Length: 255
Image (cartoon, rainbow, N blue to C red):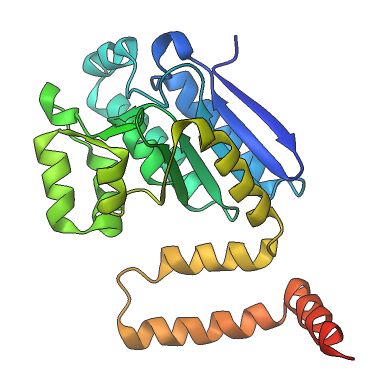
């Protein structure tokens, strides 16, 4: 059985974590499959939006027990290689030029919480979704996702979640700006795909350039950011999508 399945319909690629019996926990195989699928979707013109979801009752319950056992037995060099694979997978989501939506219908814990955190949109079920970084309970650290989380919600709340290892509700995650939407559980799937359909109607090049800018401006000074934005503004004007969009808008205002 494939640990990850991909389906594409109407410009929307659905990546399904397919380890329901393991609560979709991350393994070497699943990390590699996710990285490969993200790269493929990024380069596929038929894909405009990506939905990431989990089979069974959980979105993703963190690292697989067998994977954790393997990690404890690796050499320092092997652990760096393994950690790099995880970083590359998460970065492929962050750098994907297409919007990525996490559909969190159940627990997203440890690595699973990190996986949701790096998506552009996170829609969570009101009563069943849970979020938590539990790594410090077992002497591990959420090292890679820490970098993303601090950027996303700030130092104070990131410290709270990463050091306490507490699980929080969808409502609390939304209050902390970890996630973008809280949805009644029974409406979650329809809301996710309604959002995906709306995004799929947007300009592909404009969304890609906007995501690129959002990733790049962190750490820039105001002057550097504005210089960069000026260049990107000029670049966007030269794209076919922008030229066609302006022409279409002007034609719609005539008469």
